[in-house]
Length: 334
Image (cartoon, rainbow, N blue to C red; front, side, top):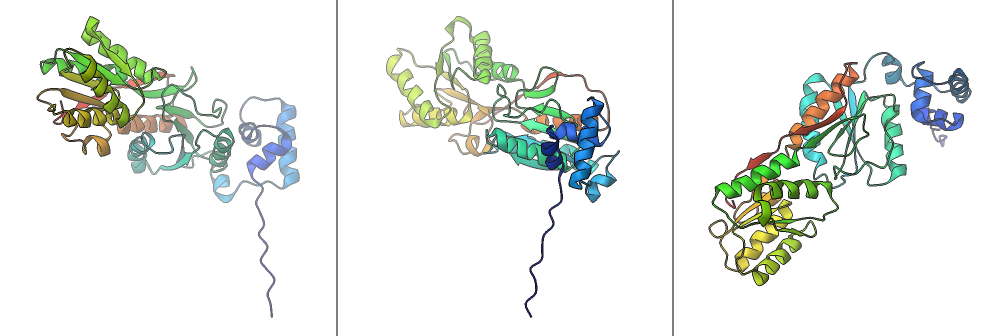
């Protein structure tokens, strides 16, 4: 006897209700929970649509109507995880002892995919969302300003009235260049990334503040190849080559160190080199190991995690940008 195939009954979800009612998921959520500001006409329309579609909160959601789910969403377009993974480690470290789990959602730069993930996080009744990215001067391709849960931004640009955490690039860069000066370096140049990046501008200005009129900045790509090329230009076009090089990131710095070695220039005896990011996989593998500025992304994540937890508990947190200090990690290249 052949049994009939089992039919799967799909549960109506809140974004089905939102789509049918012609409102956002956030509005639908507020209407069904009798929260937020909207017209009574809108609230009643959403409730009627929900009833017609047979929408019911799932078991977990029913148990959470008026209490927390102990879950947080982490939304990012940093698909390589270069910045988000250490940040998430800090978030998890801050929240794990409090019984809070973290959902990681990577969205590329796709607005439609971002919306799918946001809707899914709201459907899971997360207590809040941490938005992160790969640039501090770019926003994620999704509007998070009117969600029914709190949002904190870390290593990405947020709205003016948001709570945003970033690394203090100015302080970190200044300490790096001052370290080179303390090592007796008198001709220090800065090899960095594209001038269009806000972080490049901040780091370059900090370098100028320390070096003064002798400031010499070379812009290029975020790559080892650019580090090689910059050294070739400096050593072919200058009467007196630099004795100190401050690099905009560790990849550029590794290219610089390799290019100097190929020219018979000893690091750090002839030239001291300092990178930025303290990307362990690059800094530790450079020969000699690279002195670099650590952006303390783990601590950034930890502070973002504690802040989203406070907001989820109903505590007041003043909006604004929090800049967390960087740390110069000394190795053999400096």
